[in-house]
Image 1 (cartoon, rainbow, N blue to C red):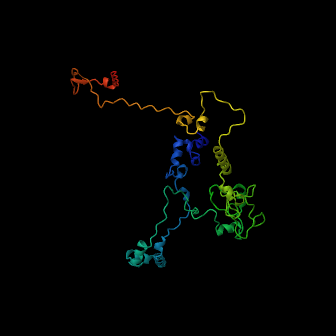
Image 2 (image 1 turned 60 degrees about the vertical axis):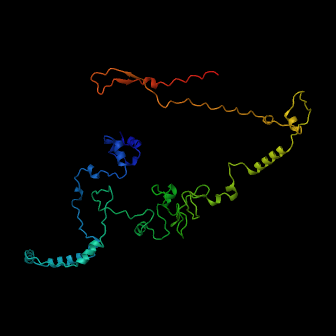
Length: 365
């Protein structure tokens, strides 16, 4: 499988390396590399030279004592003794080897006790999975660097002599956007206000053109210092309090009140017959209005119900009674030859598996 195809098959394509496709199971290899707390294989496995052969000829730095031991002053005492020992002749050195003198470096034991038990500091340790590689100690330590903060040395190297001078990459950031690796980084002139005394423009010392849209609103953040950014509403385009209180999906309250008043008026007014010839019902029939208009007439409840009534619910059918147990028929069987724990009695379970017959109907009265 090719490297391009392997990147399309895994969840984290940034972990795919050029030699991962030569594995017996490349997908599993990339999945293991993406697991949390996974330790990578040391990188010198692919080097042709032996391990640490690239450090040949490089001067090794002398060992330095830790700070809490150096503060005891023992290093200065050893240097003074070494200076005196260097002025001796070879005979004196040979005599000191045969008959050495003890107690030359005399130091208070309480000072040593405090150095190891009170002022001792924890040495710098590598985190989990951080492996050593050749010439790592000669690299620059970048752990104290912070994105967006220019050190005095870097400002001097870039020629930024004034505090209001913009960095040289600001124009490209205004054109292409903030760095994707730091989406929440505040960059003056891009998504944060410029320092006091500075001005926008392309003149020497200018901060370029602020990134705004067609309406004049900032694209990436509060570049003008108004207190709002690309994720907040522009106060110039904010809605009035009455517009905020208006519910777009709710019907208009004025129309509702008019409709309710018209319905109440229509219900309070008596039924008015349209002008025109009146039709007289045939003899023997009475309309509903005649019953309502006749004073003292009994008005049945069914006469006022114009809709069909729901059918009366049927009485619930009681479930058939269930038997608490079933008696299995027993029959005798000859014991099988050579059987283990053979019995002469067997039970027929087939009738029990079948449902019980329905009860006979009650006799007629």
